[in-house]
View (cartoon, rainbow, N blue to C red):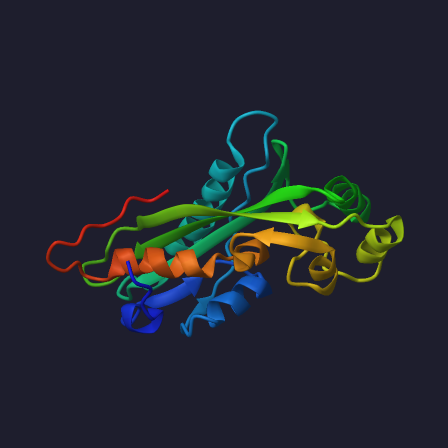
Length: 226
C-alpha cells in the first residue's frame, strides 16, 4: 500500500498522543498531524522473570496507555471522535529486557552491558478509537510492534561514565536515547527505523493508519499485520 499523507486521513478525529515523551511528540510532529498530548496514568507492566516476549510486553503497555486515555476522553467528551496513540519502548538483548534505569548506577550497569554489542530496541504501538456520533464504544483498531537493531561501538569506560554523569538523558529504556548526543556518538550501526529506536516508528504508524482509515477501493484487501 502506498504511503499517504496523514493529515487528510485524520480529518474529523481528535488525535491524541497518550505519552508525555518529548521525543514522541517531536516525531509525530514530523507527520504534519495536529494532535494533543494527554499523558497516560497507566502503570507499565513490569518485566517478569518469565512470560511475555519483549514484543508482547511493549504491546501490552501501549494498549494500557491508550485505553487509559481513551476511557477518560470518552467520559469527558463522548460526542467527539477521538483517535488515541499509545506507545512503549524497551531495549532487549539475549532475552533480557532492559527498561528505564532506576538510578544512575543502574544506567551505568545497562550501558556497560550494551557496550560494543548489538541489541534490539522494540516499540509497541496501539491505536484506539472512541467517542463520536452514537457514543462509539472504545475500540482497539491497530496494535503492532517494530524492532530496530542498534550496535554500539566499543566504548571507553570514560565515555560510558561521561554519558551517565554528564547530564545526558539516560532515563530511557537501556539508559540512553539514540537521538541524544551521547546515543548518537555511541551507535556504530542502526538496522531498521531509527525513529523507532527514538520511541515512535513513524513510517509504520503512517502505513497502519492508512490501512485502517483509508476506504478500500475495488479489489483491494487489508494486508495482515505482523
